[in-house]
Amino acid sequence: MNMQYNILGKTNIRVSKLCFGGLTVGPLQANLPLEEGARVIREAFDRGVNFIDTAELYKTYGYINKALGNKYRNDIVIATKSYAYSKETAEKSLKKALDELNRDYIDIFLLHEQENEYTLKGHYEALEYFIKMKEKGIIRAVGISTHTIAAVKASINMDEIEVIHPIINKNGLGIQDGTVDEMVEVLKLAKDKGKGIYGMKPLGGGNLLNNIDECFEFVLNLPFLDSIAVGMQRVEEVIANVCRFNGEKVPKEIEDKLSRQNRRLHIDFWCERCGRCVEACKANALRIENDKVVVDKDKCVLCGYCSSYCPLFCIKVV
Image 1 (tube, rainbow, N blue to C red):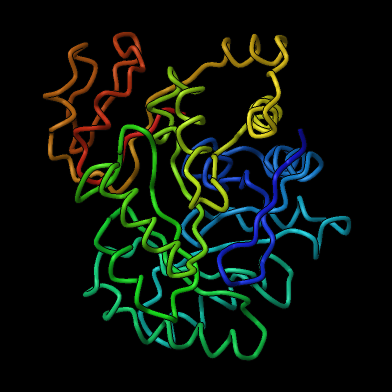
Image 2 (image 1 turned 90 degrees about the horizontal axis):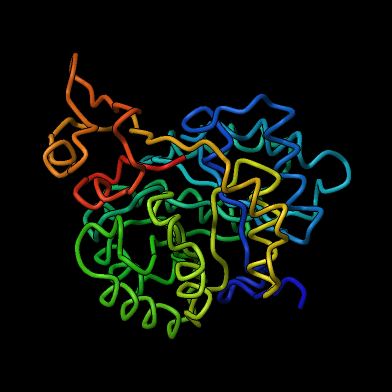
């Protein structure tokens, strides 16, 4: 079986079922050297992945630009996102993306982390600017990324929103306002309205790695997902995930390398130190020290349970 490709909603943009999640190679997580990160991304392109997701926040435009080279310059679908809320901030975000990706258009531009109808209203001036740029051919499609059911609901009847990038995984990790079943139901409605939908965090930010096959089976059987973004930071991860998405067995030598991979618990910088993870950790591996959450690597068993208690989804296994 080969890589599956789908049209993203009504956009006429053809994307691979596997989308390269661009967060993990960059400074917020693995912080790979530029050439190494680009090599991981290029491996995915070489194996049929034609879709990559990033964001201004991730600081990974340089990696993607390097990976594109001349060979893939105009063949890869790039989705990015920003927290722009006004014409001025939207214009600045778009210019930064165009300049740093060395492109004259962006395929998909999303309003980053929308929460509900009120945040959409608060960012509407930026949305209007992106729509005008779409009319000029500088953006091909406009949408939102979100961790909430409320934002999906709010966008369903907004014709301006063509693409939705929601969090979705079998345990509902990271969904801020409901269950995975509730998210599934609202995404079905969005698909019925013609929205293009590509999911994020199928492994719950690495917290569900112990059930990787079940996690992928779950998302790959959701018919409303045109594509699924998966964060990858090693060539072996790319090979393994392409095999899984192609319905092929992961080579044993790749599985062996990945099983020996050193992983760690990562706390994102937006952590507000509420202490819920500290209370939940049965291994007593977390503590708040000098106004930040500290991980005791000798005690942490990388179970990922603490992430389910984090209201801001700050905890990842990387």
